[in-house]
Amino acid sequence: MAAAAVTGEASRPQWAPPDHCKAQAAAGLGDGEDAPVRPLCKPRGICSRAYFLVLMVFVHLYLGNVLALLLFVHYSNGDESSDPGPQHRAQGPGPEPTLGPLTRLEGIKVGHERKVQLVTDRDHFIRTLSLKPLLFEIPGFLTDDECRLIIHLAQMKGLQRSQILPTEEYEEAMSTMQVSQLDLFQLLDQNRDGHLQLREVLAQTRLGNGWWMTPESIQEMYTAIKADPDGDGVLSLQEFSNMDLRDFHKYMRSHKAESSELVRNSHHTWLYQGEGAHHVMRAIRQRVLRLTRLSPEIVELSEPLQVVRYGEGGHYHAHVDSGPVYPETICSHTKLVANESVPFETSCRQVSPNWGLPSIPRPGTPMTQAQPCTVGMPLSMGPGDCLVIPVSPREHPQLGTCSVAPLPYSYITVLFYLNNVTGGGETVFPVADNRTYDEMSLIQDDVDLRDTRRHCDKGNLRVKPRQGTAVFWYNYLPDGQGWVGDVDDYSLHGGCLVTRGTKWIANNWINVDPSRARQALFQQEMARLAREGGAESQPEWALDRAYRDTRVEL
Image (cartoon, rainbow, N blue to C red; front, side, top):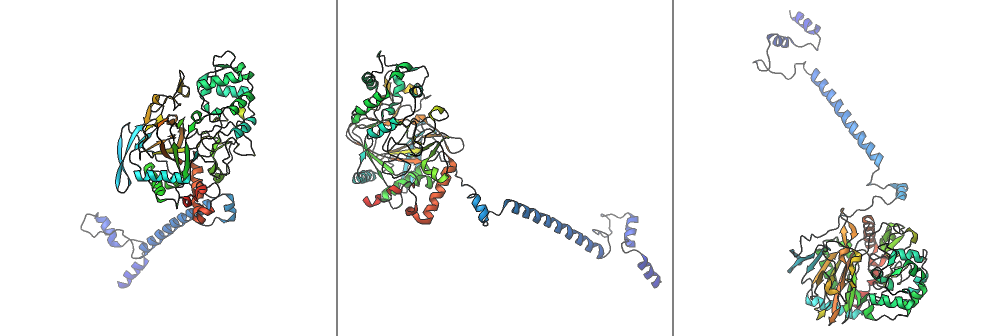
């Protein structure tokens, strides 16, 4: 019996289920019955080992596929963390740096106030003065002692006249013009009616090389060069074509303009604010940084503090602190970093003649001698400005291309009042919060809203100078992507005539390249230079280099 049992056990296949399993199935016992529950009815050891082996095979295959995929992605894109090798390095510097959006305060509504802490020991209040432009006032931004110190430092440094008529440079630049009188007429004839009205000529006041033109002065010039035979103050195309431009140049050269006839009648100097500057200068820059909420790199790489004195009779006719953004225009300092070539370049700042920047020439000279300026009409808005009519080559292809310096790119203007003015001296915004803007509507019925000597009282908004108060505004509209958009025409502003006493102000212009990529490259390069050797290793186009020794004078 025992042998038979052994034989029967041995003869049965090893994979056959035991007899008690068959009995359970025949009896219909399920999971809910009293019979013991087994997860799987299989022979001892053999089935469980095979299941484990199969499972391990599938796991290894899965992991192998995942590793193969990762290796494929790695060798397809390259390992960015490792040395790319000489061949890869020669192809380019790698991914371009990026910048976050430019901060822009909300105006909410005119008269809205918010409390901010710009210094540790006191609070300040920011009040919205207008929404077009976005303009704010901060009383008590500077203490009385800080105001007096800034004036004292400026006097120690020495001030120079803000506008000098460069007659020799003007004559040289005008003699190189290659624009026909027809093209020039079409530039001036803004309404395209074939006639030049007085207000159309007044709109190009700066063509007078810094001499502020009035209806009376234009009529006087017409009479002197016999340009308007019928004396109606309107030039037809025929009358303009008959005019000899050399007579115009001769008249402009012979006219001795008084200081009251200039676009700007003031004196100014620059105070260094970079590392190692007077601690008050550094403190003001840090306060501006907290006020504007811009990145430290943008504020620190902007220009020094300009201090301006307006004596009795001083003024600054209405202007904008920045120029229009064209695709053809590039900042001269970021151009060298970006290694780009474009028809137009700008200083992106208001420069002093002794800044030492190689691409910023004396007034009236071309930006690059290799490509002489064909429309080089100097528009002397301030010291060292080499400007031309800010027109796009796309709009006027007949003018060709020209490397010139249009108005600078100042994203924000921060203006500080350093004293109380006895009479006049307000800052006027002629078209603030107007419903619409039309350049030609600035001159109506012989009233030029830009004329701050005659018509300051007709401006929409005037800010009275109060010692220690700061005002700041945005010169550009947003582009919808967190960067610089179109210039805000409503930012037109000027300094009203000082009727009694003296007016002291200071300006901080925060400069931003309209190209986000170029600004990022510029900041990256300046950071690299700072790491490698500080200010002494910076090239000539480093912005504050010309002022690195000013602290010695202070």
